[in-house]
Length: 430
Image 1: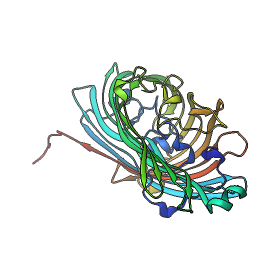
Image 2 (image 1 turned 135 degrees about the vertical axis):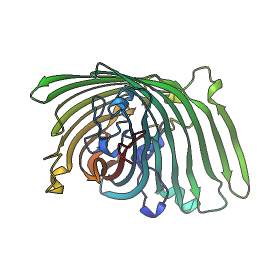
Image 3 (image 1 turned 180 degrees about the horizontal axis):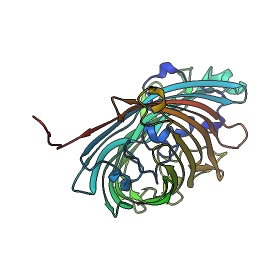
Image 4 (image 1 turned 180 degrees about the vertical axis):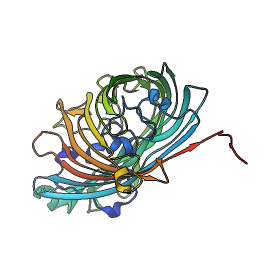
């Protein structure tokens, strides 16, 4: 039996330094982290078509030119997640804390600008245990347990640049470097009776890769202060580099190494890949009063090679594990009552709501995990309009529609700080 059909789930907040937590993160490279800042997250994760001079948008490199020509911008966001796991009448839970993004942006020359940042790309965090209650086995060996634990992250470092033409068309390109470490430990049989040897399997994944993303945005005024915007991004696939160390141990009266093997990913005949991704978006806005946006993304992991790769695809006899086409539909809405109100501070708040539905990049028996969530948020202007403090909350559920699998209900909180300053401005008076 695999984890999603384990008899007992065990997790708690005391388990500590997980950057993410989900039983499904034991497969592949873990859970893919929703990209974007707290600003993006409070609108369901949209941003492919969005051009907003108040916020740094990291979802499309073409958006880096949405700014004052002399402005320096920075965004820093944190993320706190809480998950309740349910399998039949069994419940378990965990909470985690993680960096969401750090990014800075500055002008280059006239209508061009640059952006540098880092954010999580995927997270791995799980812990489970179950008792093997076969009476014939227990009568001879005493208590027998099976357990697993894993943690780690893959991060995304990016450097982007963009340029605008005719104040309507923007193009951007981004270099992306993936890097991280994931540890997975499995104890398929641990015997209380020391006369029997227990088993231990360990995978240590050290991963890296380089790729590029290209983006485009176009805005068309519609009159009456309305503007229609469209955008698209395409991220190339990337060969996984690094290595996977696979260790098998037998623990009893003595420790015996059954297997120790290092798979250097760059030397594989069929290299593993970080998948490509296509994204498109459309937005409609009315000045700085309101905006509505829709995004669609698709990433094809079916040819990534993770299906049968050691350390990525450990699975039981009851299920098959395969890479799949990940898809996501997102929608978001923002409303500011009066951006220039000098009497009532709360009327300058930016209120947001969003919706998310997506399918995971892997499947069990050709069934993908589905996630549905709703987000709410608000940005409070600080000192000036373009400096803000963002608070967001997202709640939803995810799981695989197969009997006796784990279902997850979650509520996540995010907080973001966006700053804005003018560089190289000459004083008019001494």
